[in-house]
Image (cartoon, rainbow, N blue to C red):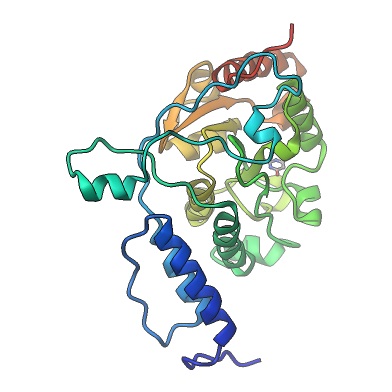
Length: 300
Ligand code: URA
């Protein structure tokens, strides 16, 4: 079907776009990109999302009270993200007092977050930046989980099972990841899981630098929208890509790193742990460090 681009071609899209603009304004967005009217609604939507407030450092999240039965932070258990801080929206602080210290940005409401992620998802589905991967994939694997998650797991790339099912970490490595999540007394639906690459590299080979560069903006924008307090990098590709380093996992483990205000912990990839079970105890040490920082009681 030919694409319509006339200004009245998408009245429904225009209503949705107007609602989005209004809610973004209520969230503190002051200025939107100028978009030529000839652009299709989807391009306009992308431009709007690209104008979300800039990243700022956040105040430390409140610790979860000890003794909660589920082992999950109360906000996550209730399907809500805890408030980032009891300060007015950054935009209103900045507007009234230019000397004000940088304050946490207003988080997007769940519906806005979901809509903005869907914009990225639609871009990923049609992406052909990596010719070989686009040619050989069954489908793209965007990411899945709780859009208000305090914790995101970042993996490397889909494998054969993920390519077939369109979901991250659903094969043997995913089953081990499920156990790791459960060991943290969390549920898969409490966290968000995504990969550096959205397409399976043929034969599960390591992603090429060009492929990582092509895909970087997708996971960066996902993280920008979800704004997790914590990110757990699974393996070298995830850790080195996110942190823009060549330091090996063994040296990145055991401490927190910063990624745009999120605390990053690095551990071994579940596929590596399946091949090298003796290293599982190190990952458990990493998870205990993470749980402590998240305020989750560590089981004896
Ligand atoms: N390995 C990854 O890094 N990601 C997946 O989704 C599956 C296996």
